[in-house]
Structure formats: structure tokens, C-alpha cells
Image 1 (cartoon, rainbow, N blue to C red):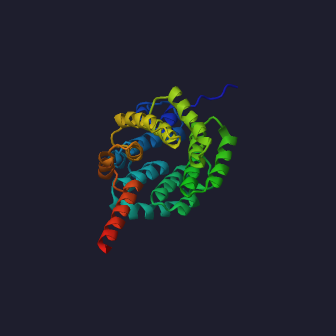
Image 2: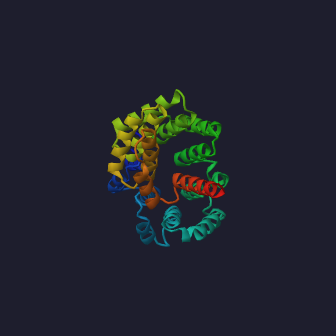
Image 3: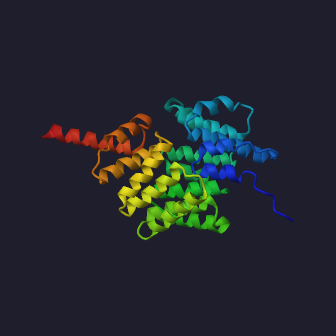
Length: 289
């Protein structure tokens, strides 16, 4: 018997690789089972969130929508305003404690994403660690790398490789781990991003991946060209701006404009927080002289 075609493969792949508008545009997939239709809608709304259209998601997902869509709406509310954070976190804890819906994989995924934003990695792992989907497994890899536990990330990656070694998320997770490990693994990570760029639409995510590999290998001129190409695709992408700050500093070029753009569009970015902390330390040191 022939295998059933995966009607959502293109949509999923576009989302995983950061081609969010393409994901939205390829979302008109008909004749889906109810479960698949919910997954399609979740991916489309998460693409809108990735593009910063939080209010659209809040407006369109009503109270009668399925649990996974309600979870995605919570993510949109969380990112829409810092005023919503406490309410969202309270709601998500309540839902996770509900036996009827608490084990829903999308709800657990969104909880993991929110607690990762909060930098509460142990809390995130409470809900993601058991896995269950490739996205949850990939999120676990990211969380472990944020915790500087590449050993745990590698174990999680092995689970993904056993399920599907060629899956886009397995390949992405391999590249993330290789970047964290460094050394000869950087070239392997670069080849993964290069393979993506040959097979699929070029995105900021792929270009940033290639650029970070180049920076690790000391090829800052090449990294800069990838990052400027990424900037042309999305002038507000925080990772592009942050990587440009680092890259231009290494090239001895002015980086203040990229830092200012990042500060305006993403004031909570880790690089901005570090820069502010360094400025405060410097100011305190000056006052003591």
C-alpha cells in the first residue's frame, strides 16, 4: 500500500527554515483531517507571530478554538506586551495542570518557548523533556545548549537521528550542536546550512547560520556579505543585527548603527542587555576615580 503523502511537508519546512511568508502563502492546503487542519492553522499563526503580527493572531483565534490554537494565541499575547506576561504564564500553568489538555504537544511546546524566553530553562524542560514530537525534541536541544549542556543536547539529538536522520529539524539541531562544540565541527555545520541554501528558499535563518560558521572560522568578510544579504530580507531581524554588531567590530568597522537598530526593535535582546550592563559598570568605575 502506498504511503499517504504528507500534505503539510512544504508548510512545515518553510516554517522550520524561517521562510515565514512562504509558509503563510503555502497554507491553503485542503482535504485535511481535523488534526492536520489544526496543525496547519498553528503553523500559519506561528508564522505570523514570527513576522511580528501578534495582534492579528490575538484577534483571529477566538475562545472556541482548539487547545493548540489557544496555546499559540497565548504566545502572541506574551510577545505582544510585557504587561501580558504574568497573565499568560498563569494561564499556561493552569492549562498544563489540567489532565484533559495538559499533555497536548503544542501546549507543551509553547510553554517551553515561553519559559525559554523567560530564561527559566528548568521550568521549560518540565514540559518539553519527555518529547513526543520532532519540534519538542529540537526545542530540548536548544534549551540544553542555552544551559551550556552540549552533552545532554547530543543525547537528545541522537533520539532525533533514530527517528529521522534527514528531517529538517534533525539537520538544524545537528548544526546548532556543531556550532556549540566548535573546532572541526564548524565546517560540518556550514555544510548543513549550505545544503539548505541549495535545496530551499534562502532565508535570514540560513544566512545567519552560514555567517556564524564563517565568523567561527575567522572569515569575517564572507560573514558580513551573508549578514547584509539577510538584512535585505528582514531589516529588523534581531539575530542578523546582533551578528552584524559582532562581525563589524571584528572587521574594525563602525557597529553603532546596527546596535541602535537592535536597541530600538528588540530592547530585551541579550546583546543589548550585555552592552547596557557594560556601560553601567564603566560609569560606576568612572565615578570611583
